Image (cartoon, rainbow, N blue to C red; front, side, top):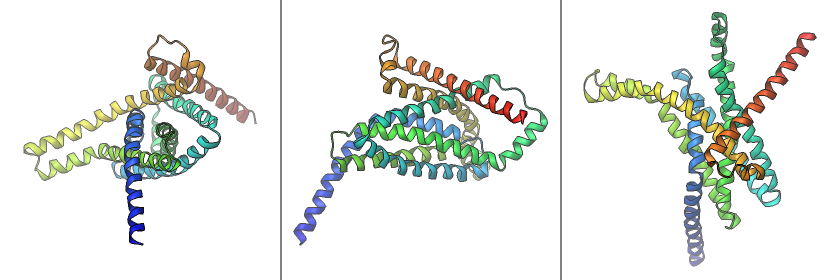
Length: 290
């Protein structure tokens, strides 16, 4: 009986060793998309009142966990029985990411100055529905990025047994969520940590200087993340198109992959923005006519 128990422990230990090796490989392959995921989600998790930052981030994190719980088993099943569906889902997600990125660029360059009444109305909205809207948008974006992470991780262990595939992808999904949102939490609370250092040091000495540095750095980091996050959305979408659409993969072979991804991401985003604008204009006209 004892020997059988220890044999089971040996099997579990051997399995964990195998999973640790495959998880390292999968983590290396997903490092790029994880960096993009961090930039995008850090940008989406900022811009809230200080008292709401952690509750909002926790809401997004819970949404991310739910996303992974949904995506991992579906990805494994689709890979086993209907692998083409994974590419279709990825491409559709790529259009969504491209739309989000291009919309941000258009809004930045072409938005008109808001009137006083609009600012007041927007402020009221921010206190209620806008926060929920931002959380939903962040969770949706996380869903698309999570699909990409899970598919890349799964692609790293296709030759392994089903058990190792399940465990490896689950580990990567868990680490992605904890790692990404843990770092985001540190970023959004930099200013609070800075203020506490200033207060405890009496605004004197080395720790006060560190505190002031943290407070002054946060707005700069947020602006950088806004830019990097937007570029990441477009690059990730372009990467999805280049790697999953055969025609685009072989198109313009002499151009650097990064440039191709940026161009295709921008073009896809512009197309979707134009379609959305046309549809909303048509529906707006129909509502007015009635």
